[in-house]
Structures are given as structure tokens and as C-alpha cells.
Image (cartoon, rainbow, N blue to C red):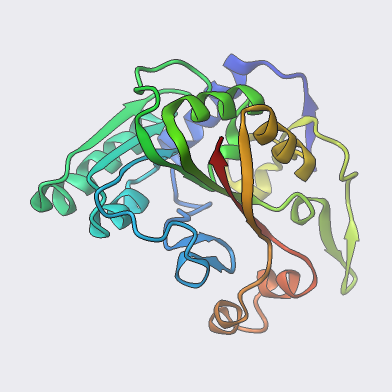
Length: 258
């Protein structure tokens, strides 16, 4: 199902950028606020609170819909970064139509999140990432950069696929482990699953927590519960719903820069 590959940052960026530049959201879709991912919503957990008058930066801004969400909640400045030039263009067009009329500017940068790209230091009240942080090839370096963008005592929020979710498959009516939870190798995701070529690493939960601590963050809240109301709306027979009844499929962490 997967091919383990040695880490080559340029190659990984090329593969993943090509996917988002071409197929984009056709198959994987876009996970955007107020949803953090499957069965977790800002409406329920209110991790951001009041963002009015704040400066926000989104890591992996995609098509701009999450930035629109923040603009509609009166954020003063919107910034976004994304690996894909095509996604940046989609975000630019989307926000030009929906945010500019409110007098809010949106600054968008096409760059890997791991690299220096001119984002100001100690400037933002919130940095967040909705199902994008897992694409980084350098977790510790990325978290360190994110810490540098934030003012002291300000907030970083991110969501990603729960590592248990990626280890489990359905087999003969039961959920079974298909790979080791401890295996963090970079793998080419099965083409029949993603209808294109992508490369990912399934990091352990401790990798995220330890990288946050090393970058100078204190975790304030972690969410891995399944929202039963969203689950009911999606239907009991949905395959993802069945998985979510048994184990978390999404996790969200809110951390504060010390």
C-alpha cells in the first residue's frame, strides 16, 4: 500500500506542491474553519475566542476560506502562507471578493512553511494551521519559526489527522492495525487512496508535543474527542463515522508562546 522513501526535502516539496497545484482539492477536499477536521469544530470548543482587532497568520492557507472566517470575525490583519502557487491564487481570488469589501487586507506568501519567507517576527496574536502542519519536513524547525512570528503570550492552534487514525484499517468488519504507531518513515501514499501522488510522515503524538516544548510553547488544550452532533449529521453508516466511534480521527492542539 505504501512505499517507504528516504527524506529528501526538495523531492517531497516537489511531489506535494505538484499535487496541490494540479488536483488541488478535487479529491482530498478542503478542511476549513469552523471545522478543524473530521468531527471537531470551533463552534463547540471555541479555541480562538474573540479575534477582533488581532493579527492572524495561517500556515497552509489553501483556498483562503479559513482566512475568510477570521476576517468575518473582525480580525484586523490576515496573513497566509502556502506551498502551492495555485492554492495561493485561489485564496487571493476568494479573499478579494469576500474580505476586501470589509477593509481588511490579506497578505499571501507562496513558500514552504519550513523556510524564511519574510514573515515579520513577534508580530502576530494568532498563528494557526488547519490540517496542514503535518506536511512539514522539519517539525521542530517549523514550530520554532512559528514561535518567532508570535508575540509573547500569544496563541498557536493547529489540527491534523490523528496518528492512530492512519495506523488502522477495516478488515472483515473489524478495525486492525496495518502499521506500527512508532513508524515515522516518509511514505508515498497509496495512489488508489489519494488519486495522485503525495508523500507524508505519520508522526507520533509525542513528536508534536515535544517539538512544541522545544520551541517554547506551553500546551493549553488538546482536543481528540468526536463531536457526536457532527457525527449524527454525517450519518451512522458513513465509514469515517464508524471509525470515529472507535478512535480519534482528528486532533487539535492550542499552545501559548512563553
